[in-house]
Length: 261
Image (cartoon, rainbow, N blue to C red):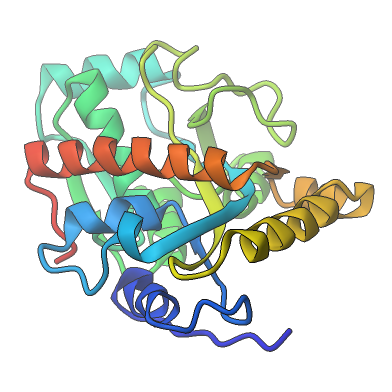
């Protein structure tokens, strides 16, 4: 299958390309949770997520992890929240840039925990992680695969993973909900989709092929090594999740005045 990487605008250009393609089953798209986040960040979207796209199915999900430098004074999330509430705006977190999953996972924590932490955007997750290790910023929310080697080397302190259950890569690290912010949950997911004009029989055939791949033990094992969990679904289940998260992120971005700039 030829792959066309159309980057730019947080993935919006690639999604728009798929949305405006023929619904013949030969042009399909893959996007992350940004598919649900971006409409809340961008006032004028080039497409309507629900009207112009037909979800084929979920592919996988992965977690981020809240980390601090090894010498950061808080030993756990409860202490970090206490510090943030005692001196609002005194702590900082680094992200991979405005609108990134690093950014939005942190903004969700700020909203749910009721804390004020300064956002320092970087040009990518790598520089943000490096400055977290050095203490230039107090914390960040990297993906598991990027953070685990530094955590194991003692360069970073893991205070909580963002999902609803602990990660096999960090079994001794609690979820953020376990660690004291019970209503918090964030996952980066991946979805396959087609133009809305694609006939249902084609969508169903593509979904069947996707589910067959995701049920493969070899595929599951390869994903797990990088902190991903295969999450096969029906097209209807994928649409329900997309609808739910579109509403959630639209509400959060509006309330907190978050944009892609």
